[in-house]
Image (spheres, rainbow, N blue to C red):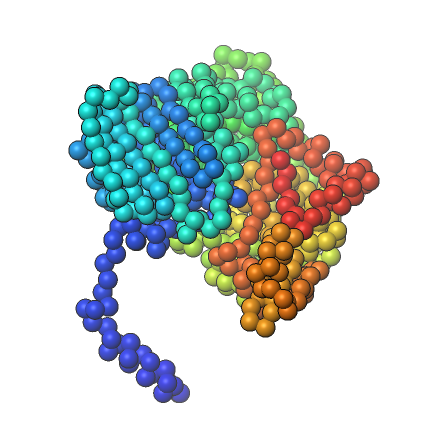
Length: 626
């Protein structure tokens, strides 16, 4: 047995010798947040994706104002986004003046640790607003209470000014204004569409509250019913069923698209990753419908094409992370589980509704029976598919898997799990060599995949490559089994690459639209140019970046145009799929209807599609279905 190398032993010995009191370090609260921002706000992306930490900052500030409204104080919140500066003004009670600095700059300080001042709040750990403070180059918080005021101004978490006074005519409340730090969020900008969606959801969940975003008012009288009515593209098969109770509200109807489209919320927070409440809701609806019609329907047939929303309020909710996108709480309050709370409510209220509205019950029954009939029509194929998928899962030659999966909920790396769908062996080989084997898997396509719009259901379901892909994703039986948080389509930036992207997006749109709705599908941006001289290389994603690089490097540089991913060496690739990886989310706008999209992108109108590809095949190509 070989012993340790001498050089290695020497280095380890030096490290051990140097381990003393001088190596122990205590960071200031703001330094710790700035050093490990992901612990507090998730991604430090540039604002191009809705789950970037920039929007967590905005949400953290608005959440405090929402909590004031939920406690009965203030009926209006004014939000302004001007360039990089965000300002939120509410008309609640105002932060107690003597605690203004502590509340904005001391971790674990807040008014929400017991259930008194804020009974069912989103933010309970006293961190949120401090995370905004620490990651902002400018942060100011001002509170007004009964004619008195106090204002504190910070930069990167450090207090620069603390002022106070009396005799103010301002209404009680709090104003927070901040500019996120470019050192934390590099070259960032806000996508107003993401903020507008956030504000709309706040309005739906807080009936009677008016939120004004850059002068536009958002207000809802009917809560989640407004949300469902305003986001459905086609007419629902029957009027949405709107059920409300103490600390719970839900809406249920059916449409004509595949999959499920259910929005979920906890204490006014949009839980885009679902959680215990969404699982309980899905289970309760299936169980209640089966018992009402006294038929042993498959839950999948009941939930096929369902559209709805569920919102509950929980005492001291627990979330999977600081970004609060997935509820982990098992109890609504001590002694009452989320499952029982939602299950009992749905069992009674939905069953009563269906008895009182037989016309709605009849339409629902026919829809479920149609879904059942459709499923059984391909049951023979399905049985064959299950066997093939099982075999494919055991020996998937196209998949280079990773060690941590999205289903490993207890692993902190689970949300980082991703799979690259690549074009050809060269690209997959390069990515495979330098990927993070813990969280990044690679699936290699053989040329252009099947056109699922023009091919029959039988052809698509029996296609070996699609079988292998479904086996890799593990979504054939249930979306909850998805093995990767991010499905990344990585193709060449040419006409063929664009065509493959459209084919893959069409496949997900037709068979698994929830993957897109839930934000799991992305397009990988890869550099189009390399500009370098003898000392330095700069990789550029568009013409503007290339021009800037040429200017920066001066005379004597050379330019390489990457025609395909296979031309990029593994050593170069490691810079493009790491922490600075550029991803464009594939998104569905609420106004989009899937069938027309599928016909446009992959139907028989080939000239229109070819024209679309050529017009959108730019050096700064971004594919978005919006």
